[in-house]
Amino acid sequence: MRVIVKVLLTLLAAADVASAFVPPMQTKNFLCRVQSAVDDADTAASVQIPPFIASPVLEQVYPALIAHKDKYGNPNIPLGSADGKRCSTLRRLHFQNKLTEEEAAHLTDLGFRFHSFEDVYYECDFDEMLQKLMDYQQEFQTFQIPKKYEPDPELGAWVTMLRRLKQIDDLPEDQVSKLHAVEFEWISTRKCGSSFMKRYREVLDKLTEVHDVGGDEAVAELLSNDAEIKKWIDAQKQVLANGKLSESRVQYMEDLPGVDWMKEL
Image (cartoon, rainbow, N blue to C red):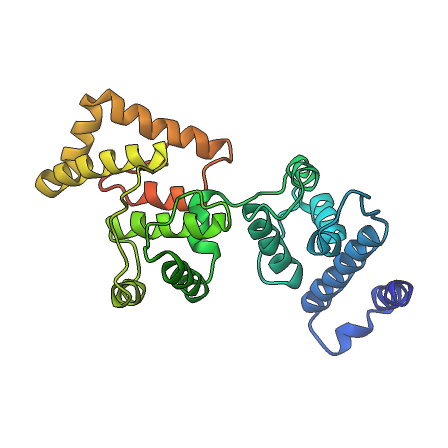
């Protein structure tokens, strides 16, 4: 098939047959896309699957990961394609401890991005996770699920994120209503919370208080006088610059009132 496509590309490019039916620019774009697909297929066909790979999902998507890395410098295929969905599945399998240590280490070496604790809420289907939560509640008669729940790490992380997002009024109303309907316990009786979120809440509360009174100018004055808050915000800038700040944390930072936190990044 690849040989046939290459022959067609050669004929089209030489005779410019397609230009009789479509504008030259569209013809050129079409040829580029087809050539790109052929190149990706050639790369994928030459990839050897490492013998230690046991995950069917990883085995299936592995050639596409390598082709994407060769083309773009990273193996993180975006959503919008079957391989992009398989990458999303890999992230969930890793969070659920269903990839071997060797598989996870190899993906990390390739530059594959696994989602973080905070990303779990955004990666998972709400209704699917709610049903899991209800199954847990039925079995244990409580919503006080551990943050690191070994039988299902994803569920523990998801519940923790629900409480965090509700605390900062960033949980959709329809989801809040569903959780109210099952009498979800919004306050955790367990001591938990990442150091980022603990500090973030402190900074958010302080900036909100100042912003409500004096607006952006008051926040700017606060930052010029409070070295600790400014130092923490600058530290998050550096983490982002190093490519290690999760998308959810980027959104949290953007929600800080009166702060153009990415300025001069």
